[in-house]
Length: 318
Image (cartoon, rainbow, N blue to C red; front, side, top):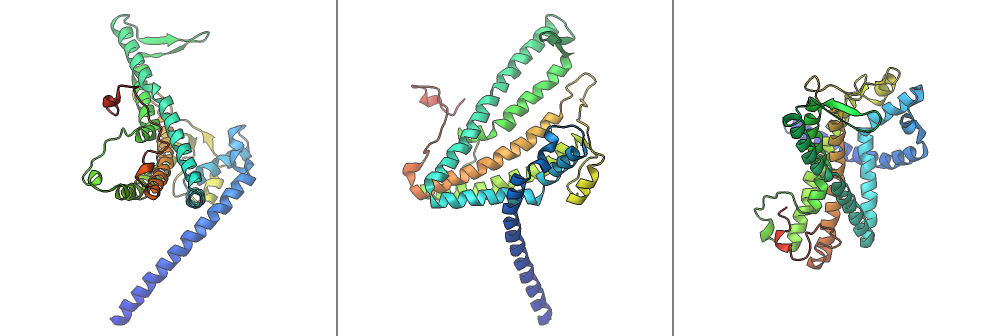
């Protein structure tokens, strides 16, 4: 009995060692894969200038495979590790990364927030066309008009809502607009808050974004190309399917004349995951820097919108 227990313990220890070795080996290969991608852009970018050639199809399937692969994950991790190492050495570099990533969040969010206004205006037009002019469709444009049934425009409103949700998520985070359930956070010290923030970004925010990306990536491509790729494919299977690959963009709506661009929602899902992961790194960096530099660095370089002088009481309520 004792020998069996010792054997099980030894096997478990060997499994841990093998897992650690696999992790660092994969991380090292991440650096190699980045160099390979930079020095061989044609092997995975040929499909952008699509001519339906064998090379185009092969490069497209490489993108489909590697986009949701462990190789891509460790390549991204290698970049994050490198940036973090430089940032630990020179804090001004890490602050620069924070300002860049928060700038991406703010710029993206401020641009796509206009989709909310478009949604309201389009809804008003739909009501007028239906109730006042009793038209079954809407047509606008110059030369060749863009004309769809009113139900198409009514269902398209979902796209504007999805744009606001997916593309403004990190902007709202920077602006402090997300709802937070606070049980202990407000009662602890500045440094304890920063530790909670660092743990939250690394243990919850980043892993959730990675999971959404992994599922969303193949969910996206299954509605863009055929044969439909699967997460279980290896590189050999993906390259073999390149011979028969063709574009098959999803254009099926929920109603006969309804909105038929639902593949855009799959693209937004992947973009959402990418933005959240990027901002998880930015939030970790900011939390670490504010932990190191103390309370005086809280909110340093933070670019938040304001309603103007004299409106401070309403900040965060809009």
